[in-house]
Image (cartoon, rainbow, N blue to C red):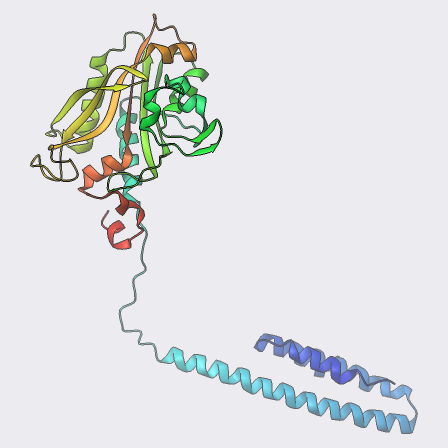
Length: 336
């Protein structure tokens, strides 16, 4: 009987022991009544007297060696267990526990949810579109051709020729109008991207665009809707003004300003010492935009508006640096 590989086999099994459970299984499989060593001893009966004596002696020596190795491991694991219990006994259960840190909604999320809630109460549905957008939807369909000066106002990230990271969520308005006939009454929240970075701009930020198209939609409807929104968002005493402006996709157009909540009209770096904060742009949808989507501009009218969510959050919570939203400072975020 060849017993030369018995010790190597036992050594291999012992080397794979990593914890007390492994040790218990190895002890049974190696030294148990039906284990490896017992199997070798059982085969001794097939040998003659002299061979049985020599082989039995060799197997018993290996068994004694295996007993010692396993005994050492048992002492090792017993000591680990003893130390665990000793450390556990050092815990003072009368001491107050450490309260876990719970996450909170980001102020941008809170502001976005509030905007959606207000416009939802006014009957606006939520529409979404892709962040990676064709130039046609981002510019041309919105009456901003390649040679239009408005292109200079938007520093754009290009994925490849003809494909951009959208600079506003206005393309969602185009896609919605292409997909359905009037009436249309939507807001389009989402992320937008521009090459800009200072105390009031970041390369990625969030916008909510709005669109309402139907028969006999008037500028007075736009003013009424936006006045309700501003007073719901900032309070009924918030001063606001509509200021004539220009956008290629609306005509006439207006900026909407509210009194600066940082300086209360006295002038500061956030409001550029004017006492007013521009919060959104708006206007009546340009006839060319209706022609681009196949709407009859003689039959229907509509208005559109757009706002930066970060700007709204800064005003609402009195934050003077937009970059605070993206520093991931728990001391800042835990205030909301």
